[in-house]
Image 1 (cartoon, one colour):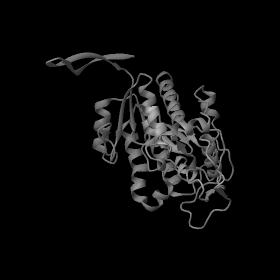
Image 2 (cartoon, one colour):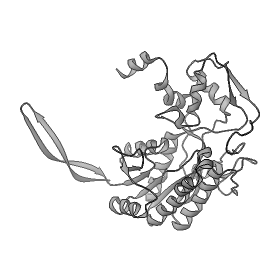
Image 3 (spheres, helix red, strand yellow):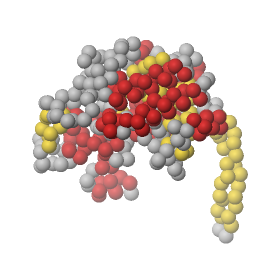
Image 4 (cartoon, one colour):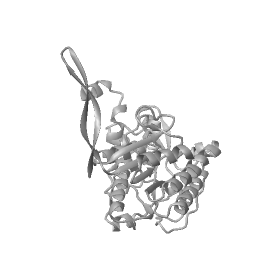
Length: 334
């Protein structure tokens, strides 16, 4: 599954520097990952790279120097990237996924979540496209939700992702839509995820604070989602019939209050200062579904299910670099 390519390397010896061309193995299977600078995109790139895929990650404002800078709103730029890289698979992670931001900056969010997705689908004819969507396409009134259940989003974010689904499916019949719930993983900042942002409240210690105890969530580890994407991609290279809508989700049901308590327990920190908030305060931002649990049997029936990593294990791996005890961090790194 590998090809050969030439790579320039600098060779140092005492008193001498030489530029050499060396033959290197290049994986035959190619994947383009949009939104590669984001939480899920980084995990997807890493998963494919670790499993012998040639990965090209694209981003925009944070792309360089690690990733290709590409404006997904520029049809010519998207066409050029696809034409030059010739991917076998595209995993479309790029999106505005913060519901409150979508409410405030609707036009920009719609352009990214709908129009850029449509452009990518049009330009990827004959390429397997995985479009990452959300459980927020459902209203949360009658869970669990299967792939064939009727969507009814409550907020603009859910509506934009649902419209994005419809666009990509209409322009590229071979698309797979993968709906996932709230995500967390190895964040660059704790506010990069609605799960890890709870770390700040956990570490407040003696100062009491309220945490939502109304809405039911199924926090899902990005490393698990990335593995699902890779398994789907590899299956599709063998079976062109793999297409349509799929669901994947963590299996531990929690409110944000319960997540915060679990985080505290994972790090042996106190949680008595956390106060469960059992009613939604007025003006709490975009409306969220009460319980949009996803039913994931389609992936499982195809042998593509991934056993979710236990929440306490994954959240510990995600948040340990943010512990206040810097001496412990230095011991680990040095």
